[in-house]
Length: 281
Image (cartoon, rainbow, N blue to C red; front, side, top):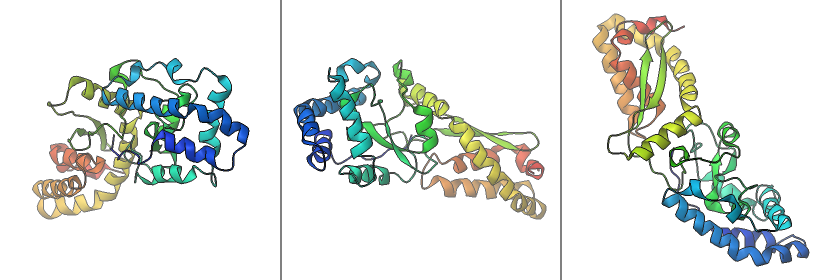
């Protein structure tokens, strides 16, 4: 849900890098004839994602028709890109370092690369940088070999989908003891219906509410003393002002930070600002 710049290298360059060094000549000779098909497959993928039809791509069109070649293309990724010390590893590391946080959840640190379309079904995209994106382990594990069945179920692609510039993350306070915060997608009216559906699907698929709610619980516990002191000194108005200031300060780096949404929700809650914070354990 957080955008990244597209990789600087293409699939042809990656495959050429991986089969030019430290590889058996028989493997090189097997894969070299497929260089153009790998490059063309990446172009088809690029167009499909840009035009919103990636869910219609038939995996049968992204295989070579040769089971041995299909397996070797997958092995290029696992053995010559992802593996430390192999020719393609610098490309792997560059893609990893392009993201400070996982672009799928926007919160956890990146640990590995994910294939947007699975390499075991779309073998011609196994080494395509546009099909490779950094991810945290939980998000990569949730995604696995998933394929969208409709346009509304197409997960956001960090190289193509720009939703970070609009404020879409909302939150509400669950006014019960102890206080908690629930997060949800509150899409702008200007968004197309399909984009709104995709963002909501993405948000639910990666269980982002659960992730943010855990962080919010820790934050609520940590600010309890400060809220009590504000309330005892100057009453409810002081609590509202303090929470509003915290929200504004966190909105500046990004409009969709979970803590900014949380503080805005807290400032709106008469129950919380009137003493609901006292019940946080």
